[in-house]
Length: 280
Image (cartoon, rainbow, N blue to C red):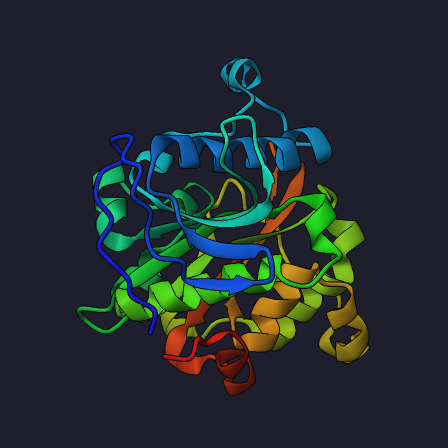
């Protein structure tokens, strides 16, 4: 049985949460120490700013870490490779996800996603007492993307987290590696016509950032062809049952075009639920 414990504040403690899942030399767990959070931030910096085209702040350049004020209140899911030791004598972090519950967002002054989208329809449209989880800052070290294990373990960790905190729905932004929406006409139009969220909870991009996703008529889209154009993570979300908000957002800092993802846990496709669920 997988045991999950309530995390405490990050105060340099050395005790770890129990391993949530493992595959060969890889394992997934939550960060318990400042050192582990910083390792996740260094991975994010490497992927987003050195490998991709994001623009770091001077403070990020000086520290070699991607960080913001949300990191202090979030949980950080880590995939580590036990066979590779970093400079601190710890297993190297090869994948990470940032998880923020609604109680964390209250402490942070709101959800990160609200900087791009008006999420009010979601917050008031969900049944009273619903527990929400924002997913963000997902990345996997390049050498581990082409081999099975790292992304699957991240999702297994998310599944355990959902169960532990009785989460009703997940949301966040997924990205295309382009700042030209016209070049993304097929995938954006496909998401708009085939996977738009229900009107009562449909999130919309903030007015100054809104980019129309309806760039092609529905009858001009081959769904199978369009699905193949989606980034792997976004494709996985859609296949598992996620829906999309209205409007894309061009993020010049990260060099991406973002779309809003809404994922009610109860609507998760059974194939994905069984694929990522852990045996108890």
